[in-house]
Length: 98
Image (cartoon, rainbow, N blue to C red; front, side, top):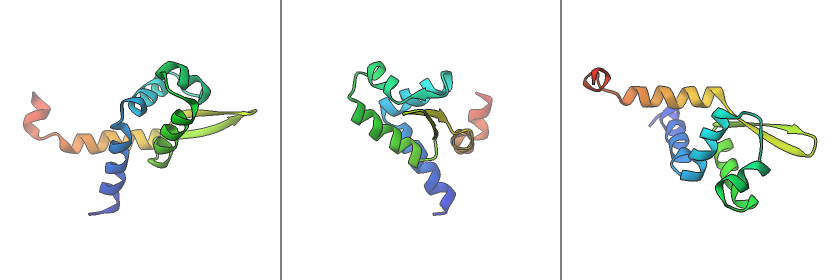
């Protein structure tokens, strides 16, 4: 199995958790979101959010930027493009016309 397949699998697995998918969707709508803003939205503890953000960061799906004492998260455009490309390769010609 090549490196690209492994990276795609890691990204898809990271998005396979409902909270992580929710975080990614929220970041698509609101880039530069502070980690502290997610705990309230998803009804989980801050340490749990931090773990989910770590998984997304390690999968190459989010980037971070420090703003004072806060860490802000945004989607990584390259990671999102890679997921889109991986999913596009799954579509057979029959599915593309459906």
